[in-house]
Amino acid sequence: MSIAENINKVNQRIVAAAATAQRQPSSIQLLAVSKTFGADAVMEAIKTGQLAFGENYVQEAVEKITTIKAQLPETPVEWHFIGPIQSNKTKPIATHFDWVHSIEREKIAQRLSEQRPDEMAPLNVCIEVNVSGEQSKSGVSPDDVLALAKVINTLPRLTLRGLMAIPAPTNDTTQQHAAFATMRALFDTLQQAGFQIDTLSMGMSADLEVAVQEGATIVRIGSAIFGHRNYQ
Ligand SMILES: *Cc1c(COP(=O)(O)O)cnc(C)c1O
Image 1 (cartoon, rainbow, N blue to C red):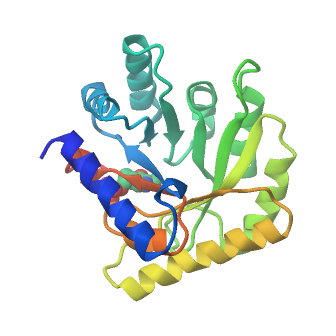
Image 2 (tube, rainbow, N blue to C red):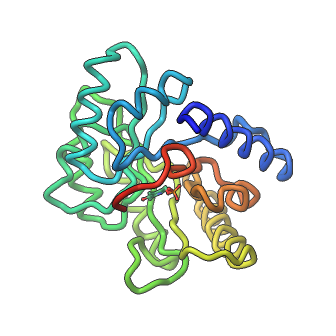
C-alpha cells in the first residue's frame, strides 16, 4: 500500500467514525505523524493534500521542516510537536513549529513563550494529560490541568487550544472509551471555567474510532499512514 492509499483509508475511517458519532467529518483534523520517516515520505503525503504533520524528535523534525520548506516554499504545511520536551530543546520548537501538544510543565510553557519569535503567530499549545495514571507516563494528572491552564493563559506568546492524551495501550474498548471520556469531561470542565479551547488531541492508528466517538478534534495517526517504525 502506498502512503496516498493509506491516507485515503484513514480519511475513510474518520468519515465513518464521524457518521457513527453524528459529527461532521470536517470537525476532525487528521495529523499525520511522520516521526522516523524522511522528507520524501512527507512530500508524498503532501501531494495527496495532507498538510498537517506531527513530529516527536526535535533535531530530526527541524531537518525535515527545513527540507520541505526549501522544496515547497509556498505550501502552508502545519507542523505539530507531539513528543516529550527537554528544557534545552525549547528554542528550536518555538521557532519551527505551529503547535505543541505535549505541554506538561510550567517552566517549558514559559520558555516556549519567551522564545517564540515576534514575527510568528502565537504558538498553539495543548496540555498533555496523564489520563491513565501510569507512573512512567508523561502528562499532568487530571487534578493539575486547571492550574497549568491558568498559567498558560498568562503567557503572551502561547495560545491554549486544548488537551492531549496518550492513554495506556489496550485492546479493551471499554477501557479505551473510559480514558477518552475522561478527557472529554476535563475539556468540558475547562470550557465551563471560561477557557476558550477547541481542541481534543486524542486517538492514534489503533483507536481513532473510539476517540472520534468521544469527541476528538485531532487524531494523530502514524503507522496506519507511513507503516511500521523501526524505532519509537
Ligand atoms: C507515535 C505517536 C503517534 C502515532 O502513533 P500510531 O500508533 O503509529 O498511529 C501519535 N501520538 C504520539 C504522541 C506519538 O508519539
